[in-house]
Length: 349
Image 1: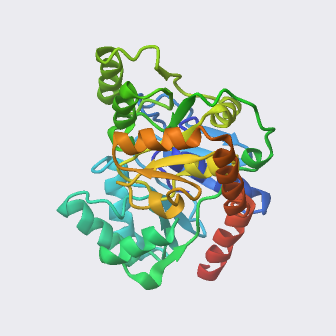
Image 2: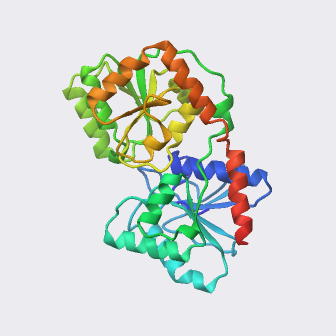
């Protein structure tokens, strides 16, 4: 597994790689995760080598290398643009890989469907031509990749999984007087929209997630202060899984208004927990996962968000939506997902 960041960083990509790797280890597959020693905000601070739940984690100073030739390489995310990590990944897949007989797979985690500039978009298409398979986490992402010039015959759709404990952790009662926004603090995640909207709404907003962009975080906090929302908007930082489930359960709804997503894990976790979800319409995959007024609400402005909140104050509607979400999500366990990925690996080796 080749991924720029890994645990203790807990963004969507990192959690995906961890859970997939953990389940593959349970299936007697030897897994090495190659990553950097970085977190979102600090460089070179993590241990160079450790074992996490049977997964050998090798952390490199700048970019990845392997000493023993693996049976397969599975790349994840290339979000840091022209970092040494990404540049070597492009070099390896385009040129160096010709000297090896190693199947190569990538799960792009949305980076193949966003516009990243002519140079990167071109490099990514060339890279896609060299890879043996590309895993899309939704049919929408697959269609978008094909539209952007990737070979449809190489793309297979395998959705993100959800951890067993999300299904099994006991439900908590809550006040249902707040919206819960869980995402890394970064402009593309769109928290600023929700902060501005709650100024004229009778609802609180609870934010949680690691800070990836310090300037954006400061903008959020400055906006909270300028609008006088200190008593309505609360930022909790990074939360534990148990705290996350309690916050989801106790909320009126989970909210996510990102600019771009591929298959947002937090939305799926809320659905597993039987909680309504409010999403924006800018990340085109979100309305394919959340159907407006069926298993949640899709909003594009503050007035629509206010109407969604008012509708969800009806406990019968919340219960109805929650039951639909549990039904939709019942087959999302990581065990099922990892078996599909393993079948793909075996077809290439």
